[in-house]
Length: 44
View (tube, one colour):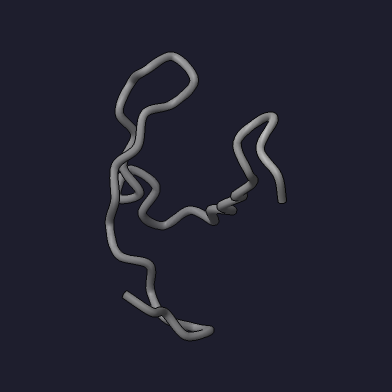
């Protein structure tokens, strides 16, 4: 799936640092910043 600037992000669920599932839909009406980075000790 490709998103363009200004598109709404689709809902998704990921585990947090404690293994508890968190969904984007839990933050409706709030600003959210997503930060992606390579896994530790991987090239790039």
